[in-house]
Length: 335
Image (cartoon, rainbow, N blue to C red; front, top):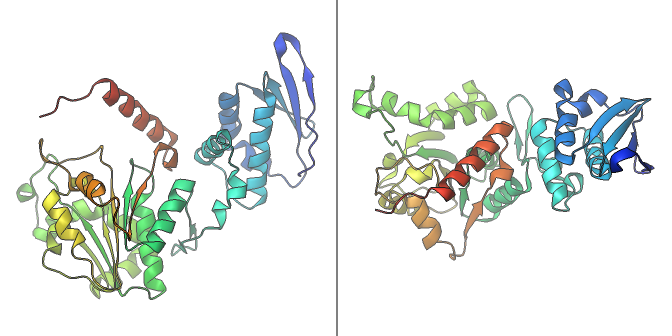
C-alpha cells in the first residue's frame, strides 16, 4: 500500500492525471462514501475530478497530487479498521493542509471508555485529544468552544471512566437553569420536573454511555446527580467528578460559588460557549470572567476548542463561521 507509483501526464489546458491503484483489500464502498460523498468532498477541496477505471482512480486536475495524497490517507484509515464519513474526511483534509497526518497522530488509539453497546468513545480531533488529556492531568479544566465540539459528551465519558476505575465515588452534573423565553413558574409539574428540561442534554449523554437503566439505577443510589447549578450552594464535594455544563449562563457569583465547592480527590470540568450566553442583557458571564481570572493558576487548564473540532453535521461548522463573520462585521454597541 505504501509503494504507490504516482504517475502524472500533462493534458490539455494544463490539467494532469494522477492514477491511484486500488487493491482487493480496499473497501471501495467505505472509501467512496454514501452516494460517493467522500470523493465529492475531495474533489471540491482540490478542484479535481475523480473517475474509477480498471481498479484504479484517475484523478484529473491542475494539482491532482493533492487529491492523491488525501485518498492515500483515507485508504490507510480504512485499513486501520476505522469508518469514514464526510466529517472525518473534511478533518483529514484540514490536518493535511497543516502538514499533519491523521493516521500518524494515532487518534484512533485514544479510547476513553466504551458505551453500553460496546462502541468505543475517543477523541475525534487533536483539539479533543488535548481536552481529554487536560482533564486527566488537572483538577479543574475549562472546555471553551462552539456547539458540536464534544465538550459535554467527552467530559461525561471521562467522568464515567473515572468512576469505573474507582478514581471517584460520585458523578455530579450541573447546569444553570437559565430561563430562555419561558419562565420556570409557568411550566407544569413540581420543581424537579420544571428543571429537568434544562438538564436533558446531560441525561442524553449519560444514557448513551451507560444505558438508560444503568444510569437511572446509579441516579437512584445518588451515585450520579444531575442538578441545577443553584443546588450546589453550601456543599463540599469530595471524591467526585463534577461537570458544569453551559457555564456561559452562570453569573459571576454562581461561578465563584461552584469553583469553591471542589473537595479532596475531586475533579471539575467546566464547559461552555461564550458566544451563546442567555443571561439578561448587561449581565456578565461567569465563564468569561473565570477564564480571565484563572488562566495562570497552577492546576487549572483552559482548553479552547475551535470550529475544526466540530463533530456534528458539516453545516454546523459553516453556520458557526457565518455567524463569526457576521458578528465581526456588525459588533454590538457596548452598554
